Length: 158
Length: 121
Image (cartoon, rainbow over all chains, first blue to last red; front, top):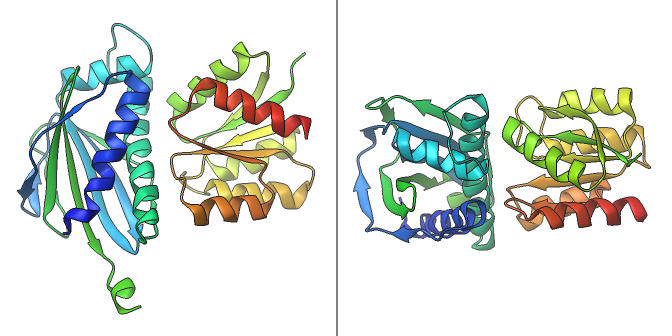
């Protein structure tokens, strides 16, 4: 897992959060996570495939998820109904899509798959490569960005 | 009556958001689709004035759907509205005949500007 694959996700997360909520987040310290780890209460999962491939996971508490979805829906109070889950999924889609665009600018062409949302703390997740974790602090609470990407073997050979 | 728009996105939240933006600007959202396959069917049935199409969707992606729509109706006005903005994807969409490429997250004005210019062209 190369750190240069993570920076686009941090940049994209800042851009997307600021755009959809109107607040600029603050970045915490990088950490490394094993290939098997457990989820937070809400985790948005998006796949990346191409010259780099793997998974991006965005974890947060239920309270943070409710507040983020509420901000996206321009609603003061939000329960996690179907529309709120869809908003959270779209948040993952926008961050991952913007990150993949930045990766492409750095010479790594990739595509994304439609995100899924896992609800449930301590669900065990396995990734092919250890994830680099970047916590970002938003006005709605902490959001953990987990990026587990590797350069595709075919791309290496090319 | 405003121009008739078909909104295509797998995320219910985005369809609702775009619908609100378009209706506030006087457009009529005549239909929605949650993937490219449904979009192609709905385009044939509804004959909208323009299509606002996401790219990353299950079943059939937005670029494939745009190509299918433009093959059946070369005069179709299709705009992409997607989180992915890499050059190769933009070029593929424009070469297929797509009129504009809006990258998410967007400001409402960007959607209205794109739709109005594409319909005026």
